[in-house]
Length: 77
Image (cartoon, rainbow, N blue to C red):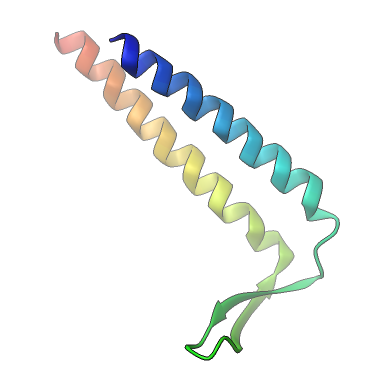
């Protein structure tokens, strides 16, 4: 159990860093950002800069799911 607690703390710290970094850099982004590239490295997809919040949201959701899974496992043991 000690290992899972350490991993949980590391996960929470990394989530905090991701959210802070995204918040700090958000104002520096252009209004339209490239989101997809072809095999030659040319941009073939663009989105508004607000889409930059999707990866931190996905990371937080996945962390929440694993955290709940861990709580369920500890209840079963």
